[in-house]
Image (tube, rainbow, N blue to C red; front, top):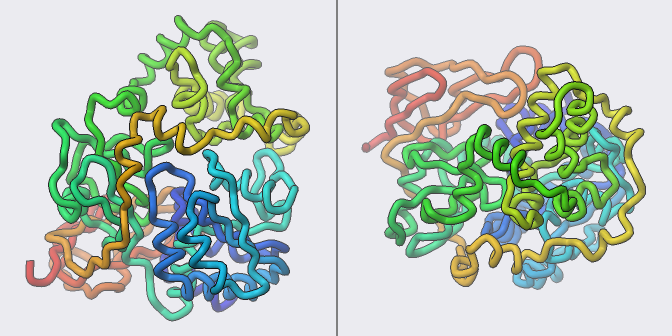
Length: 444
């Protein structure tokens, strides 16, 4: 490993765009194009714009570090057209060798498959990665973390937007391990009865009812909404429920497929055929089910396209699991062989973000900004998970009763395989070690 790659690994940098893939793996290969992703895919989130506007120099330095590391001859910073404040902020500050790409105000413009095509004209191979076409895509927050890693600063906080049914929406660096309830308290009172949280955003986020749940390194947004909201009901359907309803009500209109962003790019995903597989068994069902594998789980099919308000997205997710268990998972070469030319109507089928927000019933929240909050406090407690989204989980290096300082390694990366260490986000005393590490901060 190069010095920078090792620094990034030891700092615990993972993708801050939501996936959480260890950054050191992505930056270890040469590429032609480096893309900084500030397109902010999910409606109502503001974290990428705060990064761009408040931490510009660190972002640009992070890009420069990765340019030198990967040999990229082209650097591009992508922002949606609606983020005019970020665009106006960047124009006088961008050096001549960093391009500003203004993306359309559609969902999911921040998806890396969309970004790579819009910026380079190349499609990532089906089942492949951006590096397969000589591209590295990094979220703008990840780039700030790379810059900090090069200075010996580990990842202890993550940028989070708190929005929805709260008095004062905000965006701030919050300590990893901070309970959701304490993050919400910074926004004042919750303004609805029976609230739940959409962790990550309204399209791809998960419903969380336990407010003692802790912030992780990949937490990007906490959106508070009423339990009776339509989007919550759809996301809360059980597998037997959405399977039964889909089997009974899908009329094969094909709109889920015709509006699918990956289908429009020519990838072998057809949600309507996956829905049809609910009606079949044996070889016929298997032939239809394989059309789920290229699903990116963006939720356009369920929350935008389906006129019957069915749940093709979750049917595809469950089907992908079943394909793996049945040994029917296709290789990247098999998927690529099924790729078609771009759909002739792709240009006209982007999902307008403003209309999507209205469709989701979130328009009243969109009228309120979630500005930068310079949070410098310490939570009453932190609980830092040891579960890894990718690779092997880190191994705790502390025990109950140990004292730690902010930035100390509390769980080591695996000796071999994919993984990064975990660091204390506060100074204090370790009170428990299991699937998470609980720390009582000093003075609490």
